[in-house]
Structures are given as C-alpha cells and as structure tokens.
Image (cartoon, rainbow, N blue to C red; front, side, top):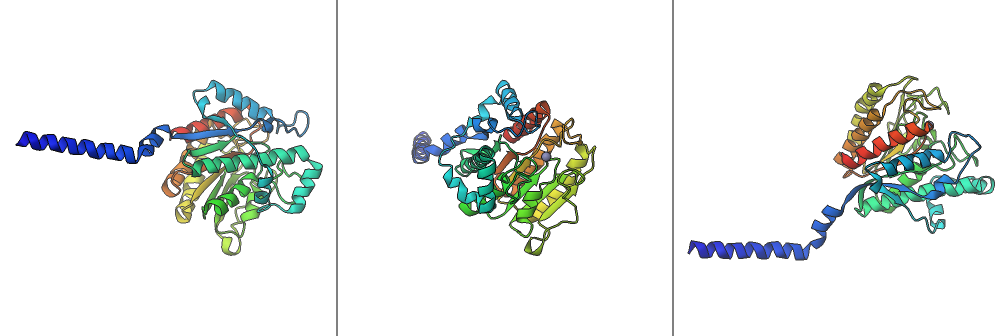
Length: 335
Ligand SMILES: [Zn+2]
C-alpha cells in the first residue's frame, strides 16, 4: 500500500515539474543566458579629432578596446548598430536648444554626429537593460558630455550632455521617475548640474576639484526651488586618494540615495580622477574605482533592481584610462 502511494506521489511530482517546464520554458532559459554587463561601442567614436596631439583623442577608446580584447572579459564587448539617427533628435531636444543643435551641426558637423551616436549608444544600453537582456552597461563613448551647455559651441571637449539626455529618455520612455547621476570625473559636471538644478526627480552627486576647469562645483550649490537638496557637490582637493573619495561616497552619497530611492543609477564615469592623469591631480587607484563601483551597485541593487548604466566621460592617460575602465567593468560584471 505504502509502495503504491509512493509510486503515485512520484508520478504526480513528475507531472507537476513537467508542467512547469512546459508552461514557463523561458524562465529557466533566461536565467542561464543572462549576461550581466555589456560594453557598448561603435567605430564612429574613433573618427572625431579635436586637433593633433589633443588629449581627448580616439586613442582613449582604441587602446581600451585593445586591452579589453586581451582580457578575460572580451566577450562583454558589443558593437551597437546605429540606424535612424533622426529619431535621436527629439530626445536631444529634451535637454538642448534647437539653436545649439543647429550651431553644432553647422560648425562641428562630425563632432555633432559622434556625440549624437554616443547618446544613441546610451539609449540602446538602457533598452537592453529594460528588456532584461543585461543587468547593466558601460558605454565606451566619446567625446565626453558633462560640460556641454546650450552655448552653440563645445565646452570642455563636450557637445551634448549624454547622461542628461539619457536621464530624460529613462523618465519619459520607461517611466523611471527618479534618476541618480553619480559623477566621479575629476572635473565638475557643471552641465548636468545646470540642467537639473531645480528638478527633484534627478539627484546629482559629483565629486570633483572645484579649483580646476570649469571653476564650478562649490559645495554651497545644493539646488533651487523644488530641486533644493537634490544637487550634491563634493569639492575634493588636488592629491585626493582612495580613502578620501570612498569616504565621501559613504558619508554623503549613500545617505542621500537612501532617502531618494532611485529607480535608475547613471554613472558619469570619468577616469581623469585616476592617479597619473594628464589633466587631473587625484590619486585614485583602479582598486579605488572598484570600490566606488561597488557602492554605486549596492545603491542600485537596493532600490533599482540593479539597473546601472555607466557612461565614459574624461580620462586622458591612455593606459591609466584603460586600466581603470577595465577594473570598473569587471566589478559591474562580477559583483
Ligand atoms: Zn574631466
């Protein structure tokens, strides 16, 4: 009798397990196939030159790609397809003025096209995250974007603000209401501050040396109107090391993020805050960037289901930029 009960129990369990597999085959498949991180790139980012021997050069990307291809995470690299660039225009206009766009197209046509491609790459990265194809993305783009204002010309090697347009895209297309932008570039992200200064839906956290270009980033600048308290500037002097910048993340970023509860984390990943940079004088090591990445991921894991999109800004020591970027990506992929 007991044997019979055991046999029928076994057959019943087999039936239930088969039913689950037949009904939800994608669940077990997607878990196995999920790649955590993608490094998104397009050859157009190698075409833009400011001038001969300028530090913001295509070598910043080409050397990084060479190192990535030699590494054990070369499988994360993906060349994105950039079609229908005209559809990007309406998103750029959520941040930039039409006259700025017209002026860039007229005076810097190639740079304008490359910066537009950088924005599209960021948008493709977010699309992939929202489709659950990946958990996070690093956009290996140039030129940088966090100094770009609406002046009709480039500002600090920047033409359009890629992370600002991406934040608007995330809010409007995917209804991700609250966006945290973390900017650890050596320079202040003055344009990101400018565009969201009175906006409580975007928390902007920036570590930088306010005595360097563009001279902004005073800690007294905390936002205005409804945006008061949603702009956090941390002015760190020349010589800042790992423990000092990590401390500011733990003491200032984490509590603010806990209050804000972001639906998406965007990183303005500038590696000119790394030691030995040509334009910076901080002493952040590759291990330091790994810890900053971990802190950012802990915030994302807690509040935004791990969704992070990281976008290259500065970083002008060709080798240093590549090493720090690799350390950052390995952490994004392994945490
Ligand atoms: Zn910079």
